[in-house]
Length: 553
Image 1 (cartoon, rainbow, N blue to C red):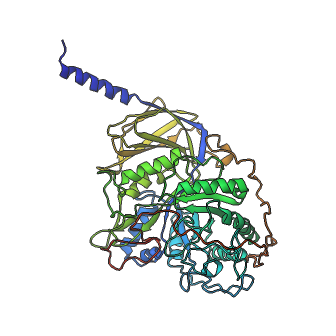
Image 2 (image 1 turned 120 degrees about the vertical axis):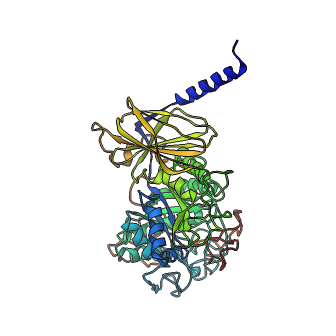
């Protein structure tokens, strides 16, 4: 008769054996969303902060953010288009009327963002997202950049000063042109930031049916194209994905998505929870971060909002389950701001060395090896508490990301269809390891790795000679990404919904004022979403870094 202890050991060994034999399949012929990258912002003076940092901190921070050897290898930056007065906006004062010639001002600095953009581009960044938190105040129903209000002339909002839609489009295009004149191509352009929220700084609202965005997007599109630009327009950078889903439905139903290059949202009030399959446009999370927690290098202790494992799980769910093509954190670098976890890199106690928090390494497990143009490809099989993502880069390499939020080690054996691996490398991040090399066994065309509890393991497999490089053609996608609904035109030219400026070959934006009349102005809902306290994302930081931050950027 066997003892209970012996039987328990046998049961444990059998359980471990079953776990070790978990099979995962990857089929590179079935493609889902195209990956466009990962990134962050240096808005509200943080770019100047990095520019003015001592050389050791500056170079160290840039390496941690952009290096594919020592850092995260980020490939997207998000700049703020200022809408305030002197020193913030390129149009600090009203020209008098929508049709009057604007007086643009360009200081060549843009709160340090121009220098920062140059640094990012020199490190391989090609995707630059410029986003306006608001139109200049004189273009809004409230008359103030920092007060709740709508863009004058959009559906439901008339102003005694006139219809400012075309003037706002000109303003946005001028910003893009100013960068272009210095050799910097802005690839994506946004005209809203959290329009479902009302803070005490730069803000502009839209209704939950997105009627204001719907009545402005064609004007912006035509102005961009008339200026000879191919810039992608985005919408709507909602405070959370629940509202963004409603905006997206409205945009699709109105046919507005034909003018857009991406659907964008933040994750503060709601993380992405499912794919927005009603449009085939890329979906980006363009801002996120823990807003009331201190800067931390702890990977996992309790599942707190500032721990790397928490963000590893967010990233895996967003990319694999909700099919996001890009994910951006809030800020990249801040100096001596350890009371906040809303940035990825800070300085150590000496103030002379850049230090990454654990969230940066959660991003790095994706961003360092999954490069722009990669496609997420189909997987089969599953493991308890593990999200598995598989991707094929344009060079033919395949990257696997295993995110184990469970309390036991998993040992997947992954086989491939349509791909023959020639070599495999693997990296592990958990509480005891930071992007550390780990064992990957390649045998019979399958790769086996160990994925410890509360960890992320990334595996990169290089193709054999029989594998061809992958063409970066979105038409190859045959997976979960849906085709546009019938209302959405697939043509590259807009369907005219309202009077728009005549297209020309001029590089300057058109200044003709729309004469479309709209009903009387409505007051915006000043509290459409409840956001966590402790944000300092829009106002200057407290003078003492030891104080709790407040407000939003």
